[in-house]
Figure 1 (cartoon, rainbow, N blue to C red):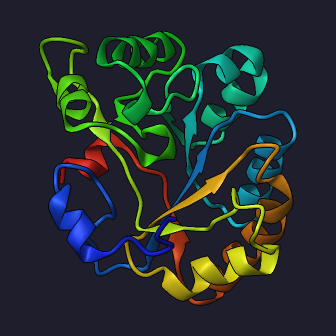
Figure 2 (cartoon, rainbow, N blue to C red; figure 1 turned 30 degrees about the horizontal axis):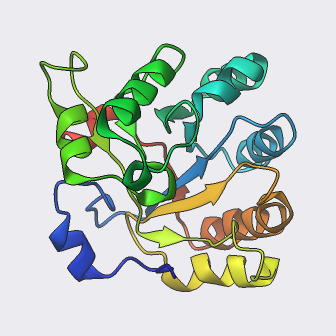
Length: 216
C-alpha cells in the first residue's frame, strides 16, 4: 500500500523531512529515482530539454559507477542529483551501521547533500545520524521525500493511470516521483511527456531541487 498524494498528517508526523517546496509560484519539482540507466535516463533528459525543464535525479551509487557518461550528462544539462544509497537498501530492513556506510559509499560518487531513502523507508535514528553535521558529512544530508507519486514502479497500474496520478494531484511546489529504471520505463515513457506538455501549457515551470532552494 502507498499514497499517491502524501497526506498532511504524514508530513506533520515527519516534519523534519522535505515533502514539497512552499511557494505560490507555478513551479513543480520532478524527481527520478534509481538511475542512472542508459536508456531510461537519456530518454528523460531528451524530454526535459524539449521544455527547458530541469529535474533532480536520486542516483544509486553502483549505477553511477556503471553509467558514468549518463551521470555526467545529467549534471552538464543543469539538473541536480541526490544520493539514493549505493545498493538501493531498505532502511527498515538494514542495520543502522550498514545503512549509513552504504550511503557514504554512494557519496564517493555522488556529490550532493540531498538524500532520498529507497522505498521512502528510513528510521528516525538513521535520518538523524545522516543529518548530523559533525559525525558523517561536513554539511549533513537533507532527507527528501515527495508530495506526489506517479506510481510508475507499480506493474498493476497502466501508463495512463500514472499520467493522471500526477495531473490530478500536483500543485504549486509539489515534489513528484518518477523512476528512470528498466522496471518503470514503459509507464514513465508514456506519462512524462504528457506531464511536461500539460503543465507547461498551464504556465508551470519545472525546477531542480538544490540546497539554496531548501534553505530559504
